[in-house]
Every structure is written in structure tokens, then in C-alpha cells.
Amino acid sequence: MSQIASVISRTSRPRRWGDAEQRSIAGMAAVVLLLNLVGWGVLLLAVAPQRLTVGSAGVFGIGLGVTAFLLGVRHAFDADHIAAIDNTTRKLIGENRPALSVGFWFSLGHSSVVFGLALRSVTCWESVAPPSTER
Image (cartoon, rainbow, N blue to C red):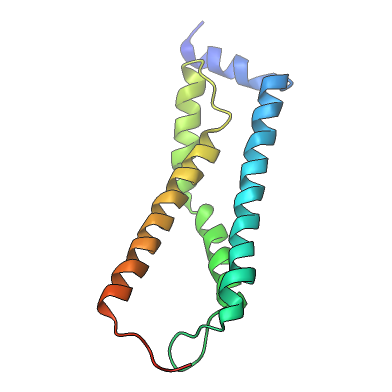
């Protein structure tokens, strides 16, 4: 049997997830939920009450947070992200290795880099920008 036929025969029949896979999926869902709760909690409880503004338009707070979240969700479905996850998943399946959490680890790594760069940008900006006296 050729390698392609072998992959097709393995992927064409449905199979049930085992207990370990169900626990893995539940763990990933819990981490995603926790990260969302922490992010929205920080926005609602720490950032929004300060009534911070950006520029003369006074834009900040909840509206900016919702916009950033929705743009992030849209960015998650960019073709290059889907292709990277799909290619890695197919490679792992072809090697008979587990591929259940590829998308989770890709998104966690990608968002960690984005968060780190945003944090670095903020710290650099604070070191060069004069403090605002407006409130």
C-alpha cells in the first residue's frame, strides 16, 4: 500500500476521541477561557476605570478593547496561519504522531510574541515620551 493510500485510509474512517484526548481538549478550552477572562477582567477592572485617552479624540477603554479583540479574531483566520497549522497537522499525521493540539500551541506561541512586542512597545514609549499633564 502506498503512503498516500495509507494516509487516506487512516483519515477516512471516523474515530472517537479517547479519555486522554478529551482531557487535552478540555484543558486547552480551559486555558483559552481563562486567558479571555483575565484579559477582559484587566480591561474592565484596571484599565477602563482610569479613563485613559489617546490623542484629542479621547479614544480608549472598552471600545478600543473590543476592536482589538475582534481584529485579533479576524487575524487568527488569516490564510497564512491556517496554512501553517494545516501543514504541520498533516506532517504529524503522516508521521503517526499526535496532532490534536497543533492549533492551540501555534496560537499560544503567536499571541505570546504579539503580547511581548506590545509590552515592549509600551515600555519603550514610556521611556521616550514626556508624561502628559492633561487629565
